[in-house]
Image 1 (cartoon, rainbow, N blue to C red):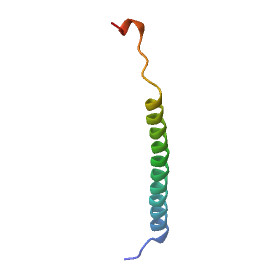
Image 2 (spheres, rainbow, N blue to C red; image 1 turned 180 degrees about the vertical axis):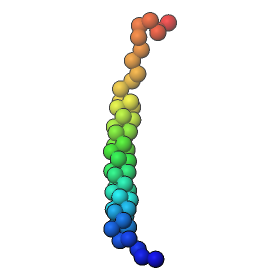
Image 3 (cartoon, rainbow, N blue to C red; image 1 turned 90 degrees about the vertical axis):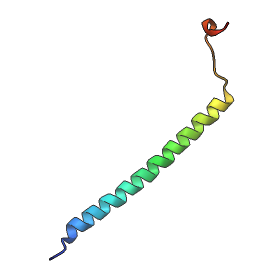
Length: 53
């Protein structure tokens, strides 16, 4: 049985690309979440006048 090297190389390249893509997306989402959490800590939640009793 022969190994089809072009297909093995293509699949390996796709897997490496997917791993890099997921790592970069995770870092971007982490920064976004940290920024959102920091803003929520600094700014108090605003209420509408009709919500106050």
